[in-house]
Amino acid sequence: MLVAGLAVVGLRVLASRYDRAVVREQLLDPTARRERTDPDGPLNYLLVGTDRWQSGSAADRRADSILIVHVPDGGREAYLVSVPRDLLVAIPPANGFGGGQDKVNAAYEHGGGGQPGTRLLSATLARLTGIRFDGAALVDFTGLRKVIDLLGGVRMCVDTEVRSIHTDRVFQTGCQRMDGGQALDYVRQRYDLPNGDYDRQTHQQQLLRALLERAGETSLRTNPVKLDQVIRAVGASLTVDTNGVPLEELLLALRDLPAEALRGVQIPSYPQTIDQVSYIVLDNGGNGLFEAVRDTRVPGWARANPRWVTRL
Image (cartoon, rainbow, N blue to C red):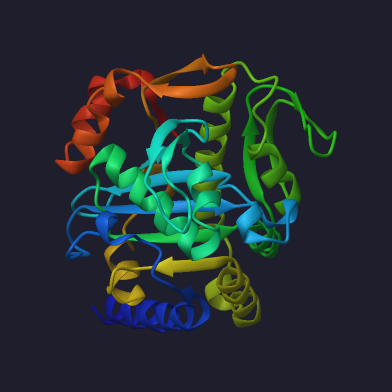
């Protein structure tokens, strides 16, 4: 009991340090926000990754990665639902944008990037899926690269050899340790892969699992200098909206979530060219996935639709 109590105290201290480090903003549009969040109940979070090294202006960037993270009641497993960047959606009007159909990652740009861009993206997804979110996080990949380096790299398994269109680096098949630059370069690739953007989505899901796994392997708790460096790097790359729930409570609620309990989910969809533009279009409205998230039936949906689910 004493050890368990000390562990909880240590987690609260760590959460307090994170709480002071990260930036807080209202990332969710009112139409996309759950009225009240219960950290001990089922949770839905919007995770948006942007790539600052492409441009210094937030308004000029599109969201590079969009995930809906669903944590069923109990917090012992999580489903990472990747939203294809090219998914055809109806974007509502905002910030001078009149609204209309476009690729989902354009919502971030039409909103002005940063906080307003994430709000418009959340409103777009809420309209499409009917899901209301318990929080959101905006991740800057440049800062994430530093976090990976501070952790000593992550173990990624390359399933198909691919040459980077950004750096000309060749990623050979097999499991290997990657530093921050290599890992982020790898998970951005989608050309010359058997399943194109669907493979890219899976690789990004695998990176999240590798990060969680690596953080658990390192001796951060016994190395206060390294821990402080990681916390500062996370804070510099992360903007959060916790829907009023203290970060400490969220960490406590998710403390039993192991890396091996993550599942990657692809939204049922297919590519289609419309007016000479390539899009991803929902297959049968998502084949019941969004309803399963709303009604907390995702584990059952995953068992019934193994084609779209990956054990990470």
